[in-house]
Amino acid sequence: MTADPALSARDLEAELESAGALPAAWLDEFRATPRHLFIPDDVWTEAPGGWRRLSRRTEPDVWWEMVGRDGYIVTQVDDGRPADPDHGEYSTSSASQPSLVLRMLDELHAEPGTRVLEIGTGTGYNAALLAARLGPDNVTTVEVDPRLAERARQALARVGRPVPVITADGAAGHPPHAPYDRIIATASVQRVPAAWIEQTRPGGIILTPWGNAYHNDALLRLTVHEDGIASGPFAGRAPFMWMRDARVQLGTLSDHVHDGDAPDVSTTDLDLCDMFGRPDVDFAIGVQVPGVSWHRFDAEDGSGEFTVWLIDVEPGGRSWASVDFEGNAVHRVEQYGPRRLWDEVAAAYRTWLGHGRPGVTRFGMTVLPDGRHQVWLDAPSMSSWAPVRY
Image (cartoon, rainbow, N blue to C red; front, top):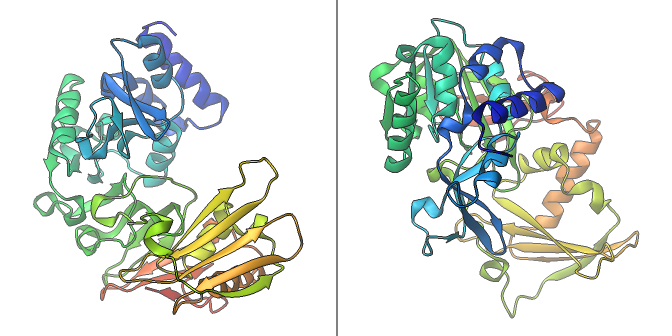
């Protein structure tokens, strides 16, 4: 692809339209907000062992190809402090996939006059789209990283949408501009901050990616009520990086599994291929087994065999389990520690099966004024799925 901004924009629009991912309600704002103006010259691409710096100056064709397609672009690694300036270990900020950006804006139901607080400015592209519809005075955006905040501030000024960019911890919201009609987060949380609920007017909406150690790929839409309760459904998938204070510290297997551990051994005939790696079941299990992560390791010989490890990542957790898939109907299970992690996950899977394999969008969450979070199936008052409290 040549360095042609108009061509890049047309390619992206054509891809989104072909996929049915360009909401008519946001078409004008999308066309008036060229994505390339918000992408830094230096971005990052996957490489063995992490991420490699890619510069617009030295690889312009690749840079423009990335900008002109419906994919996310990593814009920061290692919180901006990589040990090697050309290689990074972890991705820590990105320009989100445009189709996901537009779907979330459509879910927000923001109309002219709506006051919006955005949590996680990133490149500033999302704030610019909001400002195109609502006006810069009705949008406030918060970014925890000072360098990202300044870069976004400059990009927004260049396109004539001087949205206030606040450098602060987004978990605290931004009280001076409250109350808001809408709060939208572009980073995932495990718990909805009380400040967001307090700063949203009754009847207002909070839209945030949500996840836990087991599964981080759900979009939660809450409505705030007069009594301080916020409740609403999960609205589909939304894979995002964590807010910095919500990051799950997974560590490595060697941090949890030690020489001398003497696990109990058993077997299972559950369908491992169905249990792991499917968004609906991962979500349903994850809300029932707090503080547990899972990891799949495939055999290198292409046999299709694999091992799944379950790890207790709660502080001080010393429990783990593993189950081996070797193409047979019965699988070997090992469990160690005070938590019987395989038993917990197997019970959660059976509960999901027993309720007819419900998808993510049949679930919802209620956040109570005392901070409790409850996940429910179909409706808050339904008794068919006992609320999960954590």
